[in-house]
Amino acid sequence: MTRADLTRRDELAAKVDRLSPRERECLLWSALGMRSKEIAESLKIAPDTVNEYIGSALTKLDAGSRAQ
Image 1 (tube, helix red, strand yellow):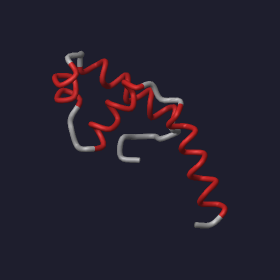
Image 2: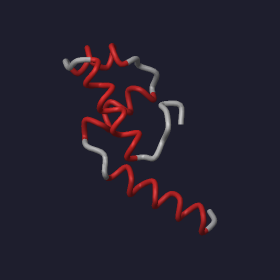
Image 3: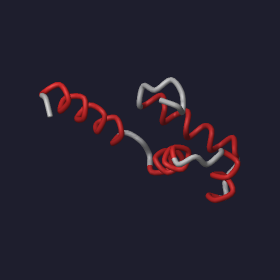
Image 4: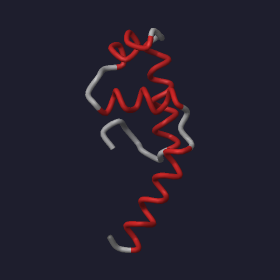
């Protein structure tokens, strides 16, 4: 691993550390292919709440979309 790779890894780790447990959970399920409605049903919260958590997580990670 190059020094630049290590720096990027450390920067990403610092961003991930800023996520709340619920943001991480929603983002993980989304990354595994679950839709907001499915995540909401699983966590017993509203789909809009799931979208808020994911949106907040994406902002904290400087990602523009779920695909990133």
